[in-house]
Every structure is written in C-alpha cells, then in structure tokens.
Image 1 (tube, rainbow, N blue to C red):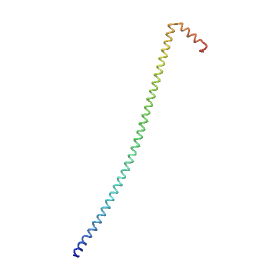
Image 2 (tube, helix red, strand yellow):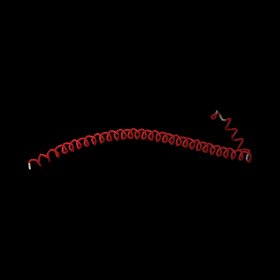
Image 3 (tube, rainbow, N blue to C red):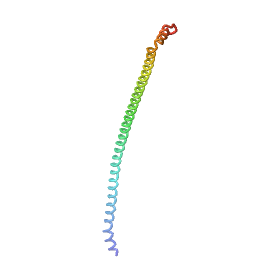
Image 4 (cartoon, one colour):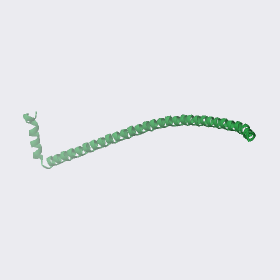
Length: 128
C-alpha cells in the first residue's frame, strides 16, 4: 500500500507543481495583456478626447464667425433701411414743399394783388 502511495506521489506531485506553475504563468501573461490593452485603450481614448476638444473649439469658432457675419448683415440691413427711410422722408418733404410753392405761385398768378402783398413783406424791415 505504501508502495502504491509512493508511486502516486511520485507521479502526481510533479504534475501538480507543473500545473500550478502553468496556471501562474497563464495568469501573469493574461494580466500583462490586459494591462497592455488598458494602456492602449487609454491612449486611444485620450487621443479621441483631444480630437473632440479640437473639434469643439473649431465649432465654437465657426459659430462665432457665423454670429458675427449675421450681426454684420443685420447691421447693414438696418443702415440700408434707415437710408431708404431718410431718402423717402426727404422726397416727401420736397414733394410737399414743391406742392406748397406751386400752390403759392398759382395763387399769385391768378391774383396779382397777393404778389404785391408779398413784395411788401419782403421789403418789411422786420424780415431783414
């Protein structure tokens, strides 16, 4: 019986130690591979984050330029509208002034005594 146990021990003990050593080696290799993958992914993630930040900055600058362009366009439109309004007002004032002058001249030509009255006003020292 002792002999059988000795034979079993002689054959099982080396196999047991070989199995443990193989297991430990496999665990160490797996940890090494996992760490290298984690490091590789970490670098890729950092690279993507940097690219993302660059993209965000680019979009911010693009948005700012579009906003400035839009503001300039709005400003120019407002200036154009203001000039058009001013020109329209001046045109209407000229039309009204011309209509008033035409009315006065028509009245003077129809009634010459009003022309005499106007000439007296021109010669009045108050208006000089």
